[in-house]
Image 1 (tube, rainbow, N blue to C red):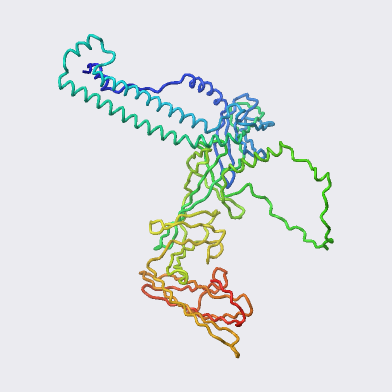
Image 2 (image 1 turned 30 degrees about the vertical axis):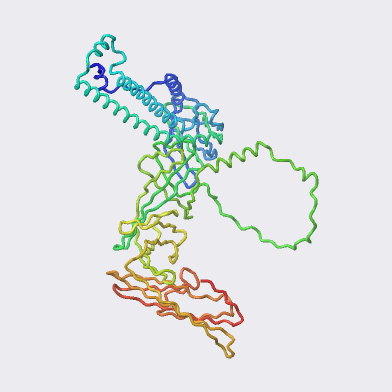
Length: 562
């Protein structure tokens, strides 16, 4: 039988409070003043393909004589440093110091804070789980003895002298069942929460260990100055590694003959400092590229000297000194750092100007290499729709939209393709490299198969015989015929592609005839690629045929590739 006071305690949940570690609190309190000393913050970042310009803003107290901005990334380009103070600040010389992160005061990895936070949460979950184990053990002891462990002996004796009534047994069993059920359910929730926290902690620890294995370095900039009153100072610098990759979403409206192009950008960086709540600008410019093109080298001619036998290297040459260990070590460290930085295969058109995208809201990009997707607006472009087919290769037709390049710079990037509100596949937008059959400065996107166009290729007719007065030449005739039916309710612009034979030897003669006459015989600047292009009205069928006569000597073995 359970004491009434015990029953009331079982009905109310036990107050489980997370443990407070005194030593951890002292460490946090001791670190606060060190963090408060650095008042600078990242206000603006301009991201280029492969680099970024970071602008920090620091408050300068009245009467200050120097300012130190510490824990800057090691990929900082010292030559790109720019200091822009308020009028109340006069700036003198500045010093740049590069040192290992583990010996720099207050320059812990930006991942350490998130790792410490997750560790604290896991410790709190484990503490609550341990408390639930105590509750479970207590309930088991109550269920076994039938009384509270701290119940007085007199009460225990009086309770043992009288048999519990059925109502008391039922009430006790219900209280134990409900308390045990809540305890087990909470323990299961805590186990799931701990697994989720450990899963989130694992990549952070791996990234921190990777950076630590490279002996990550940090940069501090000390500026000598004179300040009349409280003001602000802005420090901008270039860092290598961050970048953005363009991507697009193209939606075809066949009724209006337009394509809606939505710009997107994938931004990532592992420079060593988080960009938290910054004003982000994406630029297609490339500051790291050469500022001057290559010049022609002199083209000279001379008479080659007579060949000489291999010369035996002198002892002095054989005993050439090896490079200094310090230089080799520095080279290896730089190579490892460059390999660790993310790279983006983005190219901008050389138009002399860059297109910039200013993100209206403030953006946070962590230094863990995590990709952040941003929307950069949309553009509706008029399109020329063509139904393209190559019957000899496949008896199917595809919808192709040709788009002229809009104003501005459009870097090449992948595109998700949508037609009639449905996803049809992926393509690539690249106005710098024209697609097949499109003029310069434009591109074409294929939006999938046109099921309302029926394509048929007749069997190939191939005849071989002899020609010439003595029958010394082989004459081969080949005929191909195609039919395309338009089952749309409106007319379409049909393009049929066909490959005709091309001779690469004067001994081989090729004679071709077409019905009807094709629009191009060197489509896409490819000799031998024939293109018919014509409108086909609704409900009609278009016929196309090509006949080729090939003549060559009998003693010649014909090499053919299709």
